Length: 117
Image 1 (tube, rainbow, N blue to C red):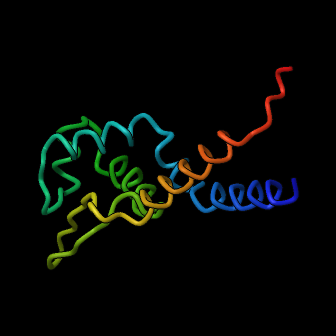
Image 2 (cartoon, rainbow, N blue to C red; image 1 turned 180 degrees about the vertical axis):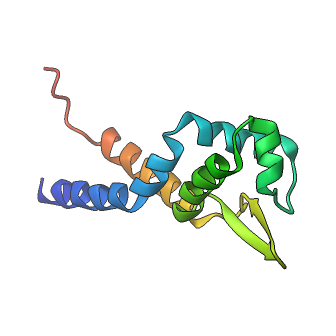
C-alpha cells in the first residue's frame, strides 16, 4: 500500500508539472488556434497576422493567446529578423510530459482496489 501512496504522490507532481499546459489548453479560443495551425499544415510557422485572419481576433488578442501557449510549452516561436513565426514542434517535450502523465494515471487506475463493493 505504501508503494501505491508514493506512486500517487509522483502522479500529483506530474500534474503540477503539466498544469500550465492544461490551463493553456483549457481555453476554447486557444484550442481553435491550434486546430487551425494544424489544418494550415504550415511547418515553418505562422505569423500573428495569419492567425488574426483565420480567427477574426485582434492582434493583441492573438498575441495574448500565443503568449499563453508559448509559456506553457505547447507552441514555440522562431524569429526571422523582426518577424515571429509560431509553430507546433513535433518533438514537443510538453506533449511528452502529458502523455507520460496519462500513461502513469492509466497504470495506477488499472491497479486500483475495487471500492464499489
